[in-house]
Image (tube, rainbow, N blue to C red; front, side, top):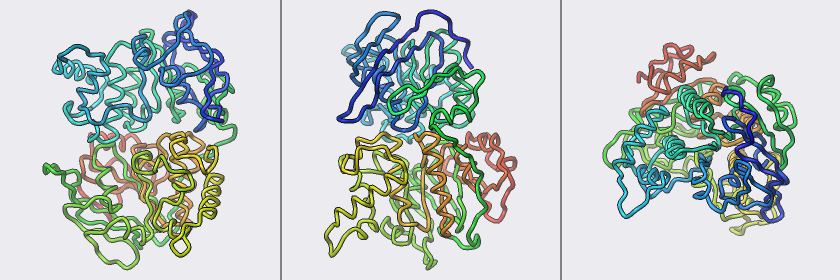
Length: 526
């Protein structure tokens, strides 16, 4: 935890901050003070207004009310103005320009100006800063849009601190980091706080709040419903304050189906990039009925390629995949084929891959071949039935929205994710193939999704869970394997050694000998 904040005047003061989006009150009279050197966590359920409040502070969203910086009234019209004042932000939804390289994005963040930019100087400064932070950002000349999600997140963190900051805002900064990387980041944040930098932290990982923050502000439906000093509280109490109810945690159930039967099996799957780089290297795996198989790893180690190959979205360069009951091997299966076999997807990027943002909620709710067929009569869409179906999903998954006719773009990130999960589970699939299904969800919503995924086992289905969140992996999985640089380590069963799994995710060990009980029936030497 950082040093105790001083009693000096707040660095930032907000009074009566209010924001409306149409008829929705995103913020309703929010007051907030942040002192120099203070680490303040902002908690709340999805749709509570946390990201909107951070966007107001960063100059992205206009608001009614008063903002003071070091006691002086300010009116922020843009992020550039906020940056010049010393406010930096790491967004949950990435703010990098995909068409530019990492170096070019960092040059923009560093305020480089003039007819000629010294990109080599930017690279050197970036390497030094990344080394200080312990962040592996790879090739600085790579096109940002081509980078895996985890690497883009690390570039975001570096981008925010490339110039001197006095207030640093972080929106779910640890979602794709290993435990070791989280500790490295927290060490940097504690060092910044000790030098007087104020930090505002949005996270749904309550142990992180207890470990790092000095104080907590809880939002509910756009209003501040409580403030707490972290000292003297714990994660359980904070969870109740945040969602207004107990959030029970339950261990994984024992596999409920016939574990000798496979819902999906892959042998020798390899994926090569256009330039010949190997992203997956001879991967074998077996998903058994009635189990959740977890694939752990830091993003960028082949998860996207594995998900794409198994989902029929990416053609492997070699290998064979069996899916469905008929046991027929298919090396060229496609998305429609696996959908007919009872496989459903929860993709890793909800805005790019999981939804059509300009379409309505009810249209997105049936954005699936089988669901669309179910809501058509003689080739004509039954719109009222589709709207009723969407309304049932909204109610069941507690999706905060203005109605099923609202666009998907109007949903918060967490509520959009819940819509995608609801759609994926609606037709009781045989296998759920999912990648980071609760990224960006609050603790209550994440628990609801976990409960829904466990329910798949009840009808004899199974789940292949790829996740960069080690807590999620160990909470849900019956077996776990670590994916590192395109190769799978051996399967482990409960009880899991989180520290050893974290080391495996970081490449410090990858033979699995210390990570849990080694299930030699399905061993692959990495």
